[in-house]
Image (tube, rainbow, N blue to C red; front, side, top):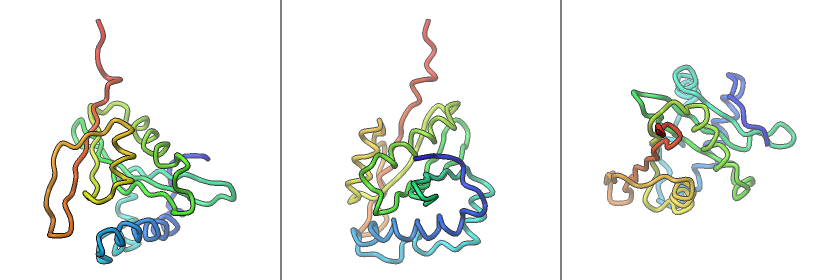
Length: 158
């Protein structure tokens, strides 16, 4: 498994992967109108211009996962960590998360969010050191859980 920066030519394949991955989330919440399923190719191209997109490449040059991130102040905001349903439970999500943290190792903290019923996501983030710091009720079906991780590698030791 190779993790590298996505190229502009990967955008369409990443968008297709995003739709496959978020169908699972949509089913959990019984809501197929979620934004990741409605995102257009032009919107993703715009994100590509302003964010860092990483991809996980499986055997056969298949994009098996992706994540995007950007920095504001001293925080790295991580979004759309996705893994193809056929490649889940193989450590790809963890590797993508760790690679984002490595790319943005100068940041003091990392932040991401997921829905309250997304148990696999919450487990993945928790086992990688992320902790819930706030929640926000979106509607009767969805509460967003915001998680953060402090970058311990930036601590100064005397």
